Amino acid sequence: MDKSIIMSRNHLVATLKKSNKEFTKADIIHYVETEGIEMVNFMYPAGDGRLKTLNFVINNLSYLDAILTCGERVDGSSLFPFIEAGSSDLYVLPRYSTAFRDPFAEIPTVTMLCSYFDKDGKPLESSPEYTLHKACKAFRDVTGMEFEAMGELEYYVIAPRDGAYPATDQKGYHESAPFAKFNDLRTKCMSYIAQTGGQIKYGHSEVGNFTLNNTIYEQNEIEFLPVPAEDAADQLMLAKWVIRNLGYKNGFNITFSPKITTGKAGSGLHVHMRLMRDGKNMMLNDGKLSEEARKAIAGMMTLAPSITAFGNTNPTSYFRLVPHQEAPTNICWGDRNRSVLVRVPLGWNTSVDMCAIANHKGNSSHYDTTQKQTVEMRSPDGSADIYQLLAGLAVACRHGFETEKALEIADKTCVNVNIHDSENSEKLTSLAQLPANCTESADMLQKQRDIYQKYDVFSPRMIGGIIQKLREYNDTELLKHANNNPKIMQELVTRYFHCG
Image (cartoon, rainbow, N blue to C red; front, side, top):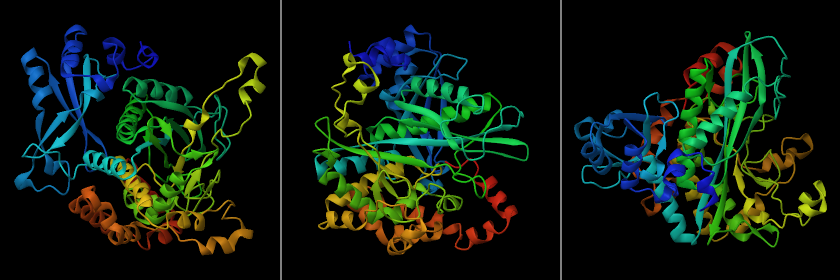
C-alpha cells in the first residue's frame, strides 16, 4: 500500500485505505455508515474570502444519497456581490475528494468543500474556485505543464501579556519556547490542518513579535508543500478556518491582517510556484534556472501591478508594502533576494552531499533535489481571495509563455542586490513600482483585464466587481494620513482585522 495512505492524518484516507482523489460517493456513504457519522457539513468560499457552512443531520441513507448527489440550493446574492436577488439561486455540490472528519465537531461529522453551479446546472463562471480551475486548464493547454503552488501562511496570535520570558522586539524568527508563547498552538493547528488533508511542509515562529498596551502580538507561519494549485487553494482556505477556530477555543485572537501597527512586520501570504511535466519539476535545467521558469517570471513581472488586485485587497495591504519590512515595493526578481518581488529561493542545486557531511558516510543521500526548486511571489497578504490570487498567478505565468520577448523582460528585471541599500539607489529608481493603494491597483487591473479574461478564465463581471470594490475604498491619500496619525491607523487595522 502507498505509504502516503498509511501515514495520512486524514481519517477517511486511513480508514478507506485509498487516496482522497479516488473517493466516490459510495466511499463517503460507507464511511458514514461504519464510523457512526451523524452529520455532514458543506463548506464553500464566498465573496468575502471566508468559508461558509451548511449543516445536515443524517436521518437515513436515502437522504444522505440525495445530498451527496444533488447538493443543495443556496442564496447566491447573500454570498457574492455580483449576483442579483431576483435570480440568486445557486447549487452547491460536494467534492468527495475534499472530505475529512471535522476535528472540531462534538457530534461525529464529515465535512466537504463544494463547487457552485448555476440554474442550468453549469459551473458558476464567476465563482472563485471555478475561475482557478479555468486558469489551471488554460495554463496546461498553452504550456503542456501543470501549475503547482504552495502558500506561506503568516498570522498573529494576540493574548494578554504574562510577563515571563519576554521576547525580543521584531526578533521572533524561529524562536523557541518559552520566549515564543504559542508554539504549542501552532503545532496543534498543524495537526488539525493535516487531518483536513493539508500537506504541510513546516511551521515556525516568525519575525513579528512585540508587546503593545500590555498585550502580546506573536507572529507565526505555517508553510505548505507544493501541490496542484486547485488543491493548494483548498488547503489554505481550510488552514485559515482551522487556525481561527483553535485560537478562539483557546481564548486567543488570531489575525491574518497585512498590518497591525506602524514599524512592525506585517503578515504576508507568499506563494511559491513550480511547473511540472510528467512528474518532473521544470524549474531547473542543468542546475540553473530554466527557460520555462524565466518565462513564467517574465509574465509575473508584466502582470505584477494588477496581481495586487487579487492579493492585496484592502487599504491596510499597502501599509505593509513599504521599504525595509521584508515586503516588496518594486517590480523585480532575484536569486535568494528578499528585497525583490519574486524570489528564487535557495534550491538545493549544489552537487555536494550535505547529508553525508552532516552524518557519517553510510548516510549518503542520492536524493533528487531538483523537485524542491520553486519561485516565490512575495507581494500577496492575508486579505487575498486565495482562489482569485492563484488564478491570477497562473494567468501571469501562462502570459509569460505567450510573450514574444519574455526572456528579455526577465533579464531586464533581474536584481541580485538589496535595492533598498543607499548604494543601489540608482537601480531602485529604474524599476517600476507596485501600486501604492487600492485605487492604483484597480486602475492597473482595468488596464490589464483583457489578459485575465482571455480564454474566459476571469469573467468580465468578476473583474468589474473587483475593480469597483477597490475603487470604493477611495484610499489614494490614506497611507500618508495614517502614518501621521496613530488613531487613524488603529481604526483601519480594527476595521480590516479579520480580512480574508
